[in-house]
Length: 64
Image (cartoon, rainbow, N blue to C red; front, side, top):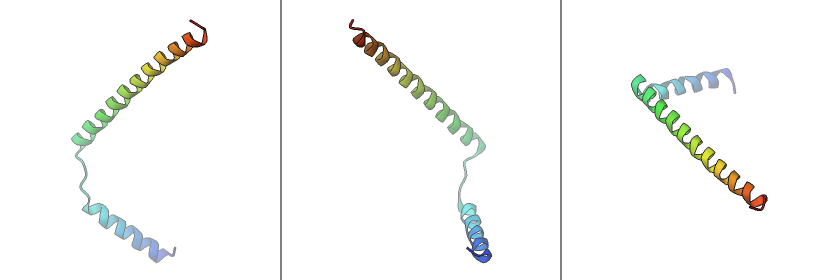
């Protein structure tokens, strides 16, 4: 890639980014909190399933 092509690429990329609409700070923070909450909830769910299955499997393997 020569210098002219690289410059042209960055000009076009900048032009396309200018056409984009961006979230407001308030919307970005709200979306981030939703993601954090959902990840935490899913993590607790998976941990709970893991715990229950490990207890059940431990009981089966010990012959109880």
